[in-house]
Amino acid sequence: MTTSVLLYTMRCNIACAHCSVNSGPKRQGAMNLDEALALVDGLAAQPHIRFIDISGGEPMLHPKEIEAVIRRVKSHGKGVRLTSNGFWASTPKRAEAVLRRLKEAGLDSIGLSLDKWHLEFLPANLARCFVDACRIVGFPPLVSCVVRGSANDAATGAPQELKSLLDYYGLAAERATDLNDWGAYMDSLSESERSAFLEETIQKRLLVNWQFLTGEGRAAARLMSEVDTALLSQTPQTPCPVAGRMPTIDQAGRLFPCCAPWVNYADRAFAKVSGATVGAEVAAMETRPSLQVIRRWGPKRLMLELMARGHSFPERNSGICNLCGQMLEQVDLSTLDAAAEAILAREAECV
View 1 (spheres, rainbow, N blue to C red):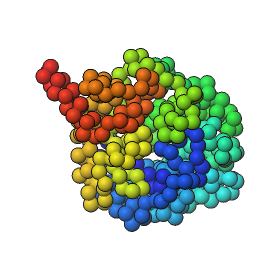
View 2 (cartoon, rainbow, N blue to C red):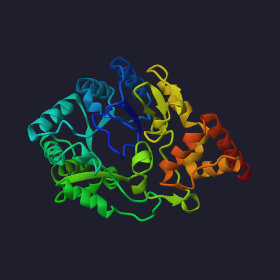
View 3 (tube, rainbow, N blue to C red):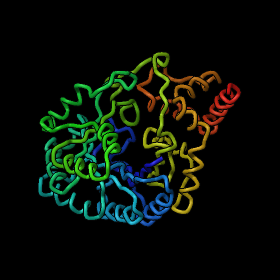
View 4 (tube, rainbow, N blue to C red):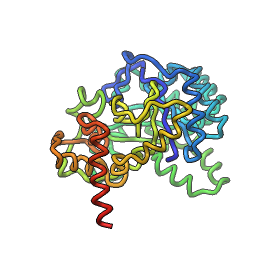
């Protein structure tokens, strides 16, 4: 466990058809700043948490508060990252001004969300303004993309749709580098080598984090015709290493084991937390039987156990996130844990 996520607000200035957490202008509210700062204090006290990611919704609807949260994270010596749709990067000058304030507050990394569905609301030139301003201010340019395709497909490598998307946004000439590959390479370098490679990245590379469209959130109602699905029997049993190890807290202080799709189910939160309780609740959540099974074997194993107990689920799915969403749609936490306990008990007998 190295990263925790604060969903500072679930409100967003746009309502993209693919949004996995149903953010949009109709969602209201945000974290109370004092409570958010207390949560940062509690999370930062956990030695295994190295980064706090700020997301939403659109966190930059609250720029002053976000700067305060960033400063508090950095006061604890932790890393802090931010994800935004970049609505504020409407001109080169404005993009640079906003990024400079975030840099001065201590932000380590910022990612721009872009894909075909954002284009209904935001112009493509935002991406160019964002990337150029990152290079001026000193952030590694990072874009996070959602593309159509199958999460159940074992094929590796970036799909053609991702390349076409970058082209449409005017980023085709950039030296695109997969974020996970970049991170693995950075970890292999010495401290001096990392500094040099980071500077090269800032000036010459475009980091790309991408994932396939899944049938969660708003996409379940609006985009299922564009979501690639597979029969459960054809779905690989894929472990999910982040389940319970990416503690995510929404604007109401509800604790979830990941950022999506779990946050769509408020009554499936593991706890309501404060700065004083978040450390103990995060530790307790990680040990829950359901999350142990999902981390070790994947949600398919848990779903099959539930089916053997009489539960029924859709015949098709779009990957492991969608499998969790299908279970959460029908089954409460105690039922999930009971099924998981049976799996763990049988496995223990085989040892």
